[in-house]
Each structure stands twice: as C-alpha cells, then as structure tokens.
Picture 1 (spheres, rainbow, N blue to C red):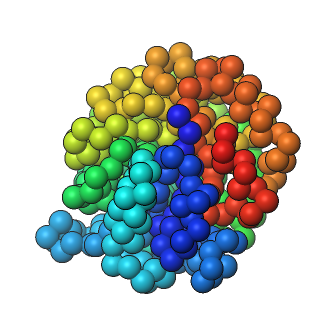
Picture 2 (tube, rainbow, N blue to C red):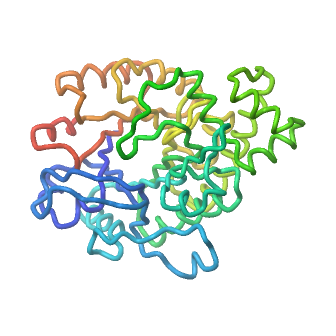
Picture 3 (cartoon, rainbow, N blue to C red):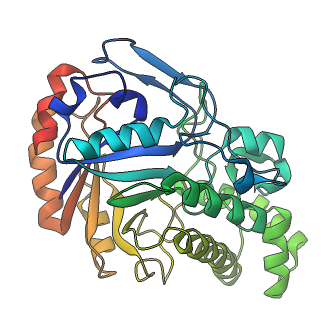
Length: 351
C-alpha cells in the first residue's frame, strides 16, 4: 500500500492534481502552521498557513465554552477545504485518509502557556501542548472527531499523538547540534504542573527531580518513573482520540524509541495493540532507517515507512532506500509530499 501526502490547497483549484495523485492520498485535515511551496499549482506558488488550523468548519456547538479551540484558515477560500478536497478525490476513485496533527499548535501554546510543555529550566515550548492536561486531551479528541465528521473516508493518520520535545523545526531555528542526544532527552522531559502532579503520585519530589534534570544526572529509577508518567498520559490521549473516530482504521505516527518526542512520539507498551490502530508510521526520511522499521515491526502491527521524496533525498537513492525498508519489514509506504514536489520529482510517487 502506497499513499501520497497532500494539503487541501494542493487539490483545490488544480485540475492537474488528479493526474499526478496515486490511488491513496493522505490529506491534511488539521495541520500546524507552515509555509508551503506549490510549484505545480496554476494559481499560486506559496501558501503561508500562519497558524495551526482545522480545515473543516469550526462548529460552535462542538467548541462552546472551551479556551482550547482551533481557528479556521483564512488562506484558503473554501469554508470546508478538507471536506471539499476529500470529496473531489473520492469522486475520482481515490482512497483518502485524514491527516490530523494533534498537539503541535504554537498559537494555543502561546495563548495558554499553562498547558504547554515546560523544560526543567522553566522554559515553555509554546509549539507543544502537553497531553498531561485533561484540557489538551479533550481538545485533541474533539479536533480529531470534527476533522472526520460526516465524511466518507478510508482512514486516519494521527501525527503528534503524544508529547513534543525540545527539537522543533520552526522559524529561523538556531538550536541544531547544540545538545547531545542525552541532553535532548532531558530537555524534552516536561516539567509542567500536570506532569509534576503525576510525579508526586509516583512518590517523587518535583523539586529534587528538576534539580537532577538541570544537573544532567537523574538516576535510572527516576527516569523510569518520568517516562512512565509520560506514557500514561500518552495512552490517555490516544484512547480518547481513538474513541471519537469510530471504525476508521488509524495509522499512528510513532517511533520505536520509547523516549522519542515530536511528530512521531515514542511507542508505549500498549500503543501498537490499541483498538483501531491499523499501522505504525515510522519516520524513515534518512537513508539507513532500516533499524527503526525492524524495531517497530517487533510490536506485531504493520509498519508504514514514512519516506520523503523531496530535497535532500536524491532521486536515484529513492528506489534502493524503499527496497531496503521493505526488506526490513515495511509493508506500507507513505510518500512526502505530492504538493511540495516539483515536476521532475513527481514520477517518484509511482512507486
């Protein structure tokens, strides 16, 4: 099974998109802010999506009384951009999955720093909503349910169904290479008020934990408790989101490293076996990602290898890369990204 990723604005207003689209399209229904190239669209070359948006109608009854609620985009002309694009693709005989980004929302994290991830130095990560907060979990579950409401879809692709960490591909990022992998792990441990309450429930003193994290020397026993608290909140988030998606098969963006944070959070003990989880999407953009596929395959759920066909991936390297990932156990491929790829890379989507 091969799927190509796209944004609603790639589909809408471009009669040629269907000629390029594979049989299955993973289409963004709720997505974080981005500045996206559209090299093949007849009407524009860049779309500046300035905030995380829900590309469906933001219905007042669903969000009444909530401070955490999505905004509609004003950079697309359709009130239901995802729904309109999905229906167009379905009429053309394509299978469509809703691509939903859950906890990555800089606008909300800036407006509500009390529910954002906070590191051990008290520095919030406004792009990252922390799943330890019930309000965040309720927001994510409602977002997912509203994204798929009243549509004939073939599946859902859940991104950021867990905690984001210190690494963030953001505006003029100046942190690349600043920390070792071990330091990244420690700086990605959330120390917000809800996470601290979770530590207390497990017998830890938050002040002592934070001091140890800052010094870079928490014990293995403490780290195990901190990871357990994170995973418990991740499990709660995922269960609440899945409950609102009905019978739609779900592809879960995930990483076999249990400590991983970001768009593909670390797998918990129960993630792969959760009812409704149909596949694990593993980030395989770099060459040599076969070990990630093998590790994910050990969970017994089909592995979907997430492969970029964009720069800096060399076109001649795509075939051998995909072959190696399939040999390692990937039974599905998710290809990034139909709308961002120039004409001379479009043939790569015919894998």
